[in-house]
Image: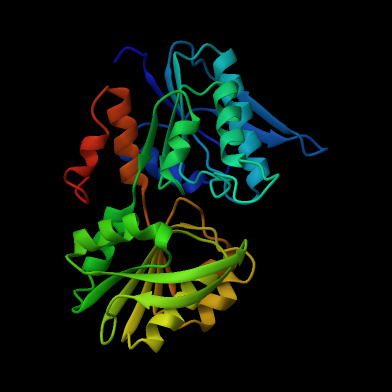
Length: 319
């Protein structure tokens, strides 16, 4: 424990999750006031000494993404200037992660820009959950712990005690995640081949694998407008699936998502609490949340005491 006493601080993006993490660690949240001036500029005041402390600041980037990102950056700057010994940015949902490479001319790589901003603002390391792509870890020049919620989602589905289960990746890019879930559930893998013409629009084209007469579990990291999940459910039903469940880490649920999910073939949508549910999502009985507070809390504890974080996943699902 070379970085001093542990201190937990939270921004406004997901205060409920921060409180649950602090309960797991049996530590109080620090006294940080994050507010706005009348012109909407963000004001941060750390109302306690953090000199020499090992500080973990919990702030994700759900909607409004830009405000939440700025809150994080300003908090990091305040902590750096207050002489914290080490600053870890705990970012349950890492925004702008889908812009992680150039796919067309004259496009930005915004995930790299955000990584640079977090680094310059004062972070010494990052803890996140299910980054959209693993390469984002390489955008930082310091340690990044990319936790996975797959074990939590698998444990939840296992409680249903259903038979003839197939885990389905909604696209080729999610195969690694779906394979991990399939391994935990001892279930085979299927893949939906799709074409995405532009952002937030997708078309399911073909199902690779046997889903006829099977219970299908669609697994993704982000459920945003829900087009991928809903189109995938239609494709699976057309191929003879008896039921379709959707599991995702980050429930962005923007735009037409709630209406699509309400009308969809999906029996239940299970997401984690990396992003708080908005009112429309809370009112949809198909949607249920499971918590990553214990997972993140354990990662924070192991980081503070210089213990292995990767060993969390050797007994995956048994944090």
